[in-house]
Every structure is written in C-alpha cells, then in structure tokens.
Image (cartoon, rainbow, N blue to C red):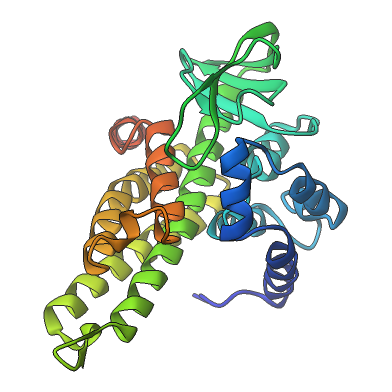
Length: 306
C-alpha cells in the first residue's frame, strides 16, 4: 500500500498552496470574518485555475478533490469548498457562483447563508435543490469564525432517487476533510509553541508528559486523515463516510482542548491565531451533528450488511 502522494497530487497541492498563499491565511481570514463576507476572489481564483474541477478530471479524482478541501481549510479559505469540490460534482449538478448551503432536515443557521442563493437539503431519503432568497436571510451573531445566517427558501426541486444518500455521504467526507486540515494546523501551532517556549530554562516540549499529550493528538489527527482519504478514494460509501466523520468529530474536541492547554490558554485570546482554526472546528462539529449522528449512520450501515 502506497501512502505517498502521486506526482499529480503533489503538483496539485503545490500549485494550490501557492494560490492560497496569495488569497488566504490568518490575516485575510480575520478581515473577512470582521465583515462577515464570503471570499469571492478566492473562489474565482480556484475556478480559474481548475481546482474546482478536480473531482471529474481525467488525471485527478475525488481523492484529489478531498485533498484540496483539506488544504483550503488549513489555510482558512472562506469559500464553499465542500459543495463545490465534492458534493455538486458527485451529484452531477451545475456549480452556481458563490456559497452553496448543505443541510439536513430543518436547517438552522448555516455558513454564508446570507450570501447563498442555492441550498442542497437532505430530508430523509429525499434530496432537494432549494433556491434561496438572500435578501430575506437573517444573519445570526457568530463567534465561530464563519458568518452564519438563517436562510429563506424561494422554491425547490426534488433531485433523483438516491441523491440524499450521495449528498450526505460526500458532505460527511468533505466536512471531515476540512476538520483534518484545521486540526493539523492547530496541532502544528501547539508543537511549535512547545519547542519555543522556555520553562525553568528548558523547552516546554522537553517535558515527557506534554510529549505524550502531543503524540496522542497527532495519532487522532492522522487517524482522521487516513479515514477521510479512504472514504474519498472509495467513492464515499455510507459506512466509510460515517466512520470517518465519527472519528473526526470525536477527535476535534480533544485536539481543541489539548492545543489550548499546551499553549497556556493563550490561544483563547483574539490576539493569537490559534482560535481561528479551533473555533471553526466547533462550527463544523455542529454542522454534522457532533459525532453522534454519523456514528448512528455507521452502525446502521454495518448492520445492513451483517
């Protein structure tokens, strides 16, 4: 089994990294969050350079698209990466400009809801493409890095049978990929801090107790990463997607707690960048229904084949 990226994947990630260095990052994220805005410029750049078409590309595929989602999230890109790169192409739907909302059941406040004109709604075994009235959307105060709003439907169309399962499975894979990118960056920040911070003339990271905690965080993040990759490579089957989401949503709580504690809670202050990733993680967990919803789906999928 080869765990190394292919030459194509390396080229894609290198090119995407260069693009994100110009169009994303903490400073830009802070500015957009302060105004509660979607990053139309980043979406345009991703579209122009072909990154939004990775899912169906001959020399790429769903795994490459998931890698791109992870990279965009790690750099705090304020775009609808999951719908554009994974869910819409998996359903064979056209990609509208701007944010696309994903929801199940009765949607609450959603990311970029006040600028979105399209929502994909899973309601049981039925899936609908919903037109949104962005003027009527109600913005909700948010401390989680993303601008949130309650959306208002202006009309909807039911999609083909089976679309709900496809949408939900790729949604779980995509949000988990976003979480992996953010958890990895939060862990890297904590590791760098532990190396640089001196306590009693010793590096904080030289204390074995902290080394153990950081090692456990790394195991959680790596486990989530490979579960997401496996699910994306396999085409997001129900069980694999649910297992990836269950582990990832469970891990992010521990990752958030440990990284902030290791940094002496400095990451809780708005002046430090760590919260830019960890607060967004809480929004992702709420979006997927914490670990409980996908864990029930994993059990149902496993028993269905038993």
